[in-house]
Length: 443
Image (cartoon, rainbow, N blue to C red; front, side, top):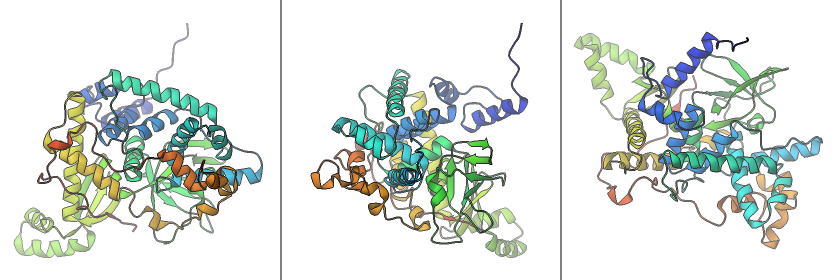
C-alpha cells in the first residue's frame, strides 16, 4: 500500500515560524488561545488574524474579499487584442485609484464593491464588460464571502445583524488591513532602469523578483528618483521568465510599524558619536542612552523586523510602541471575551489607531508617483464612462466612485465593538494627528 510522503523538513520549519509569528504557537510550540481561535476559521492563520484586525478597525468587507480572492481565480479577464489589453490595464488602475493608492489587491476590492452595487442598480453587465471583470468569479466570491461571514458569526467573532464595515471605504485603514493579511511578504519597489527593464521587488533576504506585467505597479513613474517605495505582495511564482510577483500594493510606513512582528528603536547613526563622547565622561552607557532617548524631539531610528529602517522622533516612536501593545491586547481580549465591550483604555486606543490610520495610513504615497489623468483614460471613452449625462452612471472615475459608495459618504467610524459613550478625550491614548508620518531611511 502506498502512503503519503512526509512533508519536507523545511516546510515544517516554515509553518512553525508562521504560526509563532502570528501568536498561534508559543515558543515551546504549544497551541495558544489565539491559535485555537484562528484554527476555527477555515482560512490561513495569517488571514484569520487579518479578519480579526479588520473587525477591530470596523473594516470587515475588504478583508472578506481579500480572504476569499487570495485562494481563487483572478477576477480580471485577459483580453487578446493589444487595444483591449491597454484598456484592461487602465481599468484596473482606475479601480485601484479609488482608495487613494496603487495596488492589485486594492483593484480587486474595488471591483467587487462596484460589481455588487452595479448588480443592485442593474448595470452589472456593462460594468463587467467595460472593466474586464469576470461575472462568474464575482458570483463565486460573493458566495464565499457569505460563507466566511457565517463562520465568523458562528464562532462569536461578530454578533448577528451587526455592522463591522463602516470604514470599508477608508483608504488608510484598508492599507493597514492589507498589511495585516500579507505581512511579512513585504519589500521595496525598484522601478525600471536602463539596465533592468522591469520593476523589481527586493525582499528581506535581498532577493530581487520581477513584478508581473499585468500588475498596476508595473507602469508607475516616480517623481523623486531617490525614493524606494514599500510594497506588500501575496506570493512569488516561478515561470519561464523566472520568479515573478503577480499582485502587489504600495503601502505606507505607519501600518507596517503598527503590524510588524517586532520593532526596535535606537538613536540614529549620526548621533552615535555624541553618545560615545558623553559616555566617556559619564561612564554609564545605558544611562546615557536612556537620557538621550528621553528627549521627545530626538531623532531616532525605528527598525521593523531587523531590516526596514525609518526615521522618527523619540515621542512618535514611543507612541507607536504604545499603540502596538494596546492593539495586541485589544485583539486578545476580543478573542477571550467575544461578547464583551473592550475596556475603556483599550477602546480609546483602538479608536485612536483607526483615526491615525485614516489620516496617515496612506499619507505620502501619492507624493512618490506621477499622477495619471484618469478622467481622460481609455475607459472614460467607453459607454460606462459616457453615462454621466444620462445620470445613470457618472463619468469614468466618477461612475466608479458612485458605484463604490452607492450614494453614501464614508467617514471614519468608531469600531463596532467599542461603545462610543465610554470613550473620553482625557485618556492617555495618542490623539488623532499626534503622530507624524515616519520618514523612510532610503540609505
